[in-house]
Length: 207
Image (cartoon, rainbow, N blue to C red; front, side):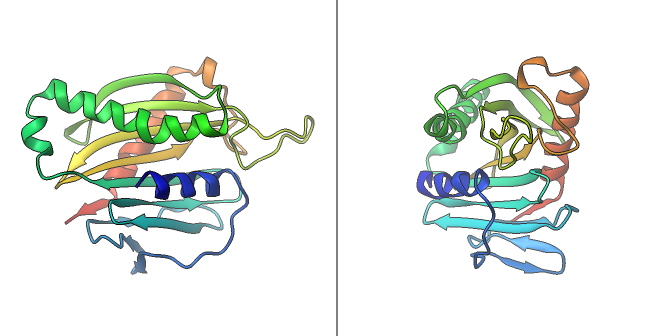
């Protein structure tokens, strides 16, 4: 699973290339190749879809040329996950470690200055999840016209468990038309990101 996420991470910081999908797109929905969920296709401009899968899980990304994207990362949990994480405290720790082990560690491979700039346990659409914002210096696919350097990537993530899988919807917060600084986020920007992640979760159907 880490291999699949790492491959997709590289794709998200490089130019998009046409790839054969592992999942299926039917009637305006993307269907996971592991048959664990489907998601409504977001209304993104000139959208491209890229996905990866391995025996343990995978990722799907919906990208537009502005640098904006939605992504869903997912991993099959071991059969004893529920019994080992019966308390809310243990589930919370598992959610947080998922972000650290998957999203943050892969971001650190790209930039050693990557960091979680905001985190909280929140209620989204009736269930508890772990919310985090990660800043990746020069991690965007877009380049500043003046400095000629890549923009920072500022990514919101939400982690939750459902039907034996761990899910991590994510979205890019810093893109053309929505330039932000991860270290001076406003309450409005944070709430907008939470709403977007909630929208992604709401558009998913689980099996």
